[in-house]
Amino acid sequence: NTGSALSGLVFSGDSGNDIFVNTGTSLNGLTFNGGADDDLFSNSGADLTRLIFHGDAGDDRFINRAAGVQASDITFNGDAGSDISVNYAGGVSNLTFSGGADDDVFQNSGVNVSSLVFNGGADDDVFVNQYKKNVPDKEVREHSEAIIKDMNLVADALEQDAWLQKILQL
Image (cartoon, rainbow, N blue to C red; front, side, top):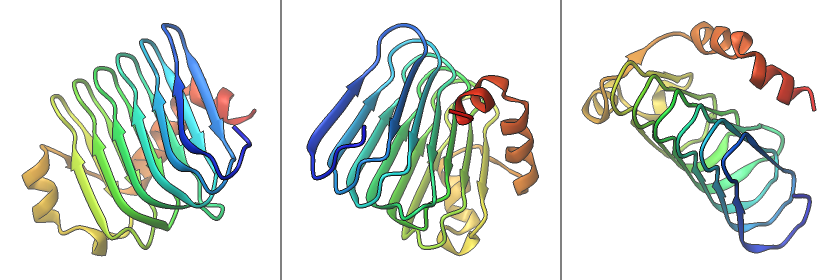
């Protein structure tokens, strides 16, 4: 999507690997429904009011890039599969991650995130918050059985994900 000033944009994938890249700006309500299999949503569009990611079954990836991205609310629902969500944007007010079943990874590098909720779900999940002032460790433990590691763990996971690396070269 490259459009601007849209309201209620919905991307609905099917079975199979789906890719959605958003560079559009001033969007009011953007929803990504990945469907079954491995899906990727890359966002670099600025001034979003609300962004919702539903990965469904499969190993899903969401990347919110830093370049001018402002969003009031971002919600990631990974469901079953080993899911990865990475937020580089500093201008996100509310950031919510629900990983679902399997091993999930969530990385936040956004500096000005006001509210951050992490719920990894079942299995071994990794939460990396580069800016720990956003959420006290106590809150993380109350929401999940998170394994909190340093930034290198997520970077290593992304480097080893050949499918994701291929897509990011688009």
